[in-house]
Length: 280
Image 1 (cartoon, rainbow, N blue to C red):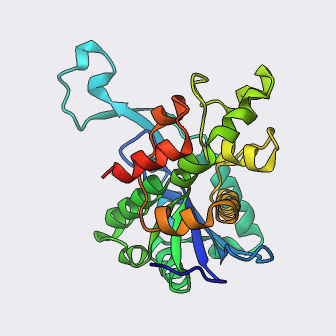
Image 2: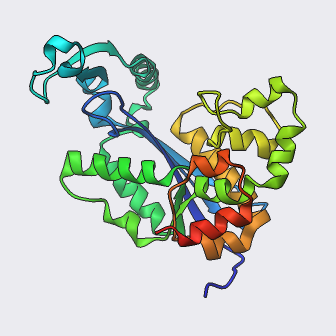
């Protein structure tokens, strides 16, 4: 059984990836925040990089779809054939940023090859007690997918530490009776800030949970690796402060899939935790 400590260094990681093409989940940008989440006065340290292999290959930023899905007449087209239909809007933003960095001689500090980024990440993991992200399954899969794509092996260093899914923590403990009472007290207009993208269900993204924790319903997630890792670090600190025992004994080293249906049904935290224990 783990004993509570005065210091627990959590490395909180976030990635932004390619999407809507055959390069789905290849990392374009990565950021992480490392600090002692048990110390209110701790100032975490952060890093952020752009992936050279991704940034310097414009073809990876073309959104595409399978040709067989375009029209009924093309349904027999071989599965691997695709057609492009637009350039990812983020590509120009990154290119403009790199041009600006180059002008001030900072390009090499931010844009690095994936193997160099992993070397730095491994060094920081070496002084961390655990590694976390808001949607652990996605971020972990993206890191391993990118490593295998470029270097044909797994990034084993990330598996030497216990993993934590912050979304798992919040969905099962923070979204509770008090949370739904909070939502009931909001106006209909304010409640829209806590809905999923479809507007049909209550959301549970890092953005929405940040609105609740900070009581700032206007907060907007930037979908940039560094600020997102910082807000996820903040969410982790809130969780540890309020649910320290659950952090260490239920969630740490035991990330699980989050069920949106349980949130839709407004199950109590106790009911969700009992069901979670039974989930494989």
